[in-house]
Length: 55
Image (cartoon, rainbow, N blue to C red; front, side, top):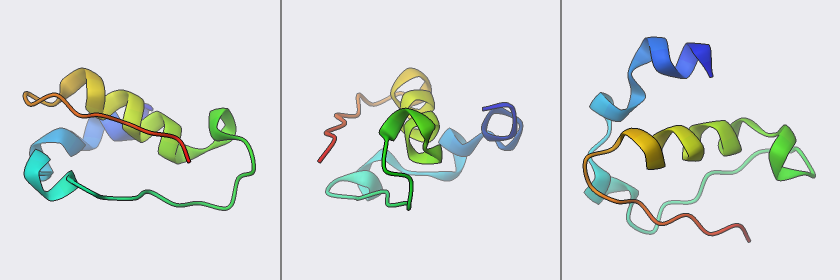
């Protein structure tokens, strides 16, 4: 999470570009996965609300 904050990922992404996006990784449990950290961070920092759905 520290690295995501340092890189200010929310400023590099346009929320419109995330519409229909899918973050993938090889972890079998979402809490152990980097995508969980990223989506948690983005939902807290993006100026436009982002809806996250675990598949």
